Amino acid sequence: MAAFEYDLVTLGAGSGGVRASRLAGGYGARVAVIEESRVGGTCVVRGCVPKKLLIYGAEFARSFQDARGYGWTVGDVHLDWPALVASKNRELDRLEAVYRNTLKSNHVELVEGRGRLVDPHTVEVNGRRMTAQRILVAVGGWPVLPDIPGVEHAITSNEALDLPRLPDSIVIVGGGFIAVEFAGLFHALGCAVTLVIRADNILRGFDQDIREHLVAELEHQGITICRKTQVQSIRCEKDGRRMVTLQDGRILACEQVMYATGRAPNTAGLGLEEAGVALDPRTGAVQVDAWSRTNVSSIWAVGDVTNRINLTPVAIREGACFSETEFNNNPMTPDHANVASAVFSQPAVGTVGLTEEKARARGPVDVYMTRFRPMKNTLSGREEHTMMKLLVDRATQVVIGAHMVGPDAPEIIQGLAIAVKAGLTKKDFDATVGIHPTAAEEFVTLRTPRPDLASV
Ligand code: NDP
Image (cartoon, rainbow, N blue to C red; front, side):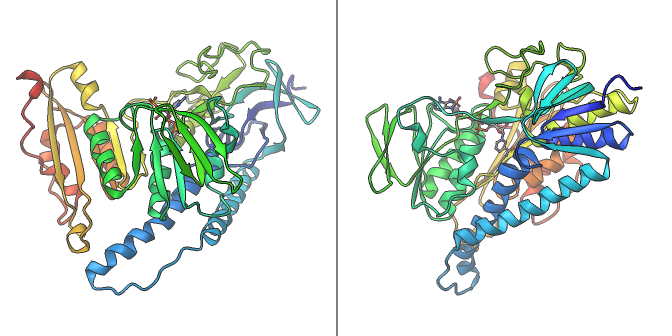
């Protein structure tokens, strides 16, 4: 008789948890996954997918504007926001069903409820105790809001994806991925958008030139940016409008206030401390090693709950490595180096490898950069510029960073990420014949490095 009811119990049916569970199930393990919300997790239910669908919806507004320069007569156009939200929700329902079917076809039992660790081999859910040889914690993260007066009048990205009506104005607090993406989304749909950032620029951690280029584009479009200040309080008027008081004394009136000030690992109340699992004292993230093992030998963790690189494909990779190692006798660890990422802002950002700041800290670097007006914008008259940047290790000539702001940047950088991951050199880029006319061809025609200010 087996000592445990299950070989694996996974807490959380998001990207990492589902991938790990379905692989383990497919390898013949007895697996259960516990989920308190919808199957699919942040990415499918309240993150990447719904956001991208709404952004696709918003991009039509730009297309209508651009079409005039190409000879189109565009009449009165009108967005039916509830219809867009309903279409998006139908797609989420479809995707959730796909996820559920995947679990089922891999013989993974789905238990709906909130799971809690009782000891290193036992999880309790809906009053039922389940024992498992291995437990995988994949419960993700959740938005964090600072404790300021009136914060209950603010929404997060969770609610922004399902607003019953499109606000005429929105104040977005934060300057990270989510803030910048939603600023672009709402601005494109015609809302007056104000970003409130505590730093002097958006997208901390990104390449400085990328940040400056994007912020200039956002301001040029008409997004207001309040820098170096914070929200002191939020008041809700009788008519529902919000009055946002900033520390610098400014008061902003708007229909919605959205907080995008980061996300925290969902570890509270999960029984982790009771089971002896070490958490990061600052962030509450589950501490893991390269194999996603916690300090308790029967417990692993993957995805945002570990606060390594909080991106869906990374969680999926971590989950897959866990199951390959533990259930397929195929030991592997996730490689967190040179993970490409994108900000689906308007214009979008794509990035892989080192920023110029990080590259310079390592040693001498050749910087290749170009700014240009994309061909499409010539006839449309759109005053928006694309920026591209390559960072090359001067000694080895290996391309160690590629960054772009402009249409299709995420798609273009995904291709370049292979080259950066493979450690290709500038010579390999130069030997590649471009596809003409594209914006992407600029990445293989950059000939002259920028004068090295650092060595002047
Ligand atoms: P980020 O960590 O990207 O950004 C948080 C922002 O909030 C920063 O600008 C930060 O400012 C600011 N901030 C933090 N605390 C406060 C505070 N108390 N008051 C005012 N401002 C504050 O978090 P997000 O919520 O945007 O996104 C969470 C994560 O989700 C991302 O890191 C990313 O990993 C993932 N994500 C990825 C996406 C993608 O791949 N396209 C899209 C959306 C999310 P400062 O810079 O000064 O620290």
